[in-house]
Image (cartoon, rainbow, N blue to C red; front, side, top):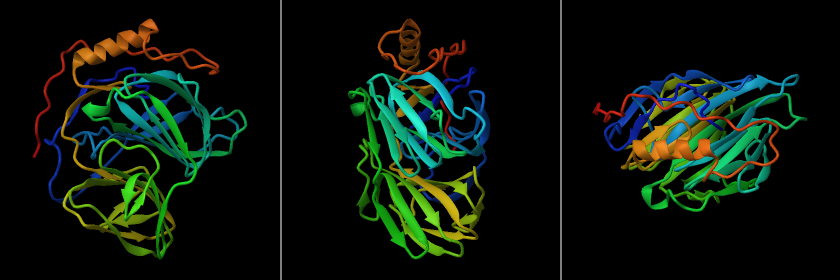
Length: 321
């Protein structure tokens, strides 16, 4: 999925300046962003004061939307570099096309994982004949410097490992949880898991104390470490935890996101993650000139033009803790 913001700002993220080394409970409210003509998303990352969680650098939550009489998701071809995109659905289908020639329909609880490496372009759309509801999350993972120029590739995994406890089913999307390891390729120590909780469940999830964590609420009513987290909001948890208390007031869906704090300082703009403003400028020029990012075949529409870069030079990011 793309960042379609026509006023995209250059953002410095990563580094340890914003990492909290102890357990905290920081509730993040979303920013509402229009994605095309028919889909509104709730953007949780980057957020004011909270740019990343581990290597997770971008989180959008959308739906559930009734698209029975609508086109649904329609995201034209657009570029990416320096990151992985993670497509995760609870309802509906998304058709993925990319400049490598991939053509794949991603369905609920299936992993669509695109590694951009140096450069790739892709489109995402609801199939012409689609389910009534569309509900999911789109996330980006920043690639570390040693791997950010890898060959671009797309992976689709329909069968993912599951961890269970009374009233809990945890599907491991990326990384490892309680000994279960996702088949998706990860380039940093990371965890992404989908948590399905039955009404009345009280449980504790094992965590890695060195990891930084957050929990995104997808649906239902749940408490995370005693804090009610409503659908479309995210609770940042900091580091230093060996377990996480969960309680479900109703059937609920959550996403656990975490990983080792990302030490490198990054520059993020539009759909690019780089290490300098010059890299971002060069990537924008390459996309607008039709070089480097390839071409997406089969999408009924023109590629997405890049917005203008802001005229003000990028300023270093301050530290809050």
